[in-house]
Length: 254
Image 1 (cartoon, helix red, strand yellow):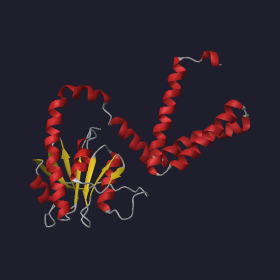
Image 2 (cartoon, one colour; image 1 turned 180 degrees about the vertical axis):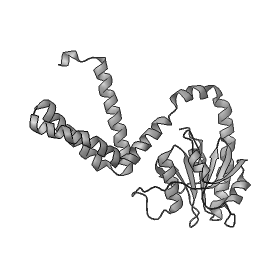
Image 3 (spheres, one colour; image 1 turned 120 degrees about the horizontal axis):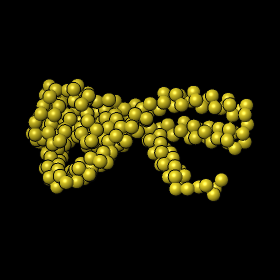
Image 4 (cartoon, helix red, strand yellow; image 1 turned 135 degrees about the horizontal axis):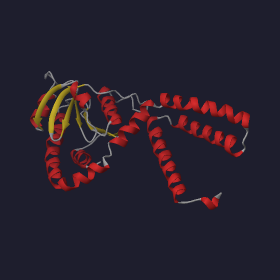
């Protein structure tokens, strides 16, 4: 059996190992790791009974349970599977090759767009003005943009501060920035139901986490209670940021 082991078998094993590793990371981040481990134990038991020991009766029962279990897995992990597919589609490996030729121009544009956002967040932090800013990356946020009011303006510190001013009609909801322009404000974001989010964090933080779970966008939160600046990205929080750290996070190419 081992004599027939070839390069295809090696690639097959590496691909399975990679998928298991990515699945483990995804489940660990969503708090469903125990269910994932239970499924792996069941699969291992099924393989031993059906393939190694060749126990026909028990093996046939487990075969039936496995066929039904596939549907159950899709139901149980629909959010995780959706997130995995979104992350898979947001990699844009081929697109990165095209972006290589225009990299210098984009880097300069993005660098100039970051500073007005950072300065606006620092100013709102001092005045304890609540804000929620979403910066679109590779995954389009068209559905979220449609829920808000169209702005379509250049990124500007004063404009950002005026939109989130307490008496402004657009201060509730999120601002969405795409390609260096403020495209919409007062947008509604999906709320994360992750139980690992600390209770002290409010609805803005949960909304920021929600959009970071469903896309590769960066969400910036300014707390209305404490003035603290936080960032949600890839389903994780970076809390209590200063200007330098915020600029670093916004400058990182993902």
